[in-house]
Amino acid sequence: MSENNMDSKNTKRTILRAEGMIKDFVTGDIVLRALKGVNLTIDEGEFVVILGPSGSGKSTMLNIIGGIDTITEGKLFYDIVPVHELDKAGLTDYRRKYIGFVFQFYNLMPNLSAIENISLAAELSENPLNPNELLEAVGLLARADYYPAKMSGGQQQRVAIARALCKNPDLLLCDEPTGALDIKTGVEILKLLLDFNRRYKKTVIIVTHNADIALVADKVIYFRDGNIEKIQINEKPMNPDEVNW
Ligand SMILES: Nc1ncnc2c1ncn2[C@@H]1O[C@H](COP(=O)(O)OP(=O)(O)OP(=O)(O)O)[C@@H](O)[C@H]1O
Ligand SMILES: [Mg+2]
Image (tube, rainbow, N blue to C red; front, side, top):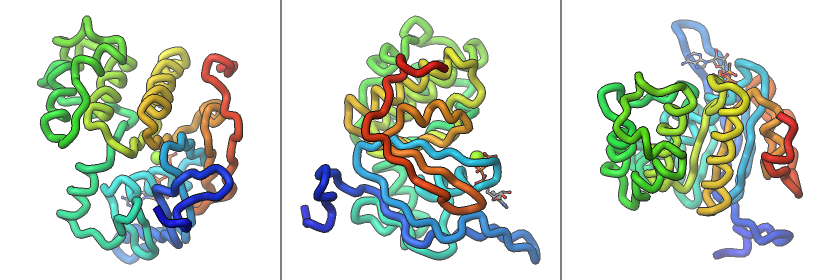
């Protein structure tokens, strides 16, 4: 590992680096600049929360980091992978190798049971975790054969998280994972994500409107109008049980 990759203070390794990221959405004659030159580094194993007003570019950035959208200008490196240079096939490969996604609205396959939804992801992965163990970890072993329509929102989100984790991704990206849930269920989901982060030393990035979630993060990124307004490092992130939700 080169000296350049190390932060001499705490020996953390930079895993993600964005340099001057610009994203333009073009609709007819109208160009909307959703990202206006974002610079950012994220360390391996960090638990990162992104906050910011609606329309400030949070999802746009997450989608680009996850390789489901592309940047207009600038650079994005995941480890040594130049994501900004990848073509369609390269991006597919990048997502398959490194990325897990959790969305606000679960996106489960309606005609597959809970365990089948998770197993499908396992079949598509190189180094999957055990679907049954994950279903147990999210507390849903008893619902293994339930279809999504027969499960509550929180249960569906737990299946979606088990599915994302099953891929054993090095980088887990979550866009408002608790947005559609009540507070208690949302906290349970958050604990699952933290557990994955701490236990397996995986990098997790969460976009949320819930500022309380920032209290448990290692790094909080505040977005405003297509750029980063400020970055806050929590030297001692709170335990979710200490937070007054
Ligand atoms: N596919 C698209 N085509 C055109 N404009 C888009 C597209 N996706 C997003 N935008 C615009 O880019 C800007 C940033 O959108 P983005 O979805 O990243 O915001 P956000 O911070 O995630 O907001 P929210 O908190 O409401 O989810 C917005 O002005 C939005 O209208
Ligand atoms: Mg969004």
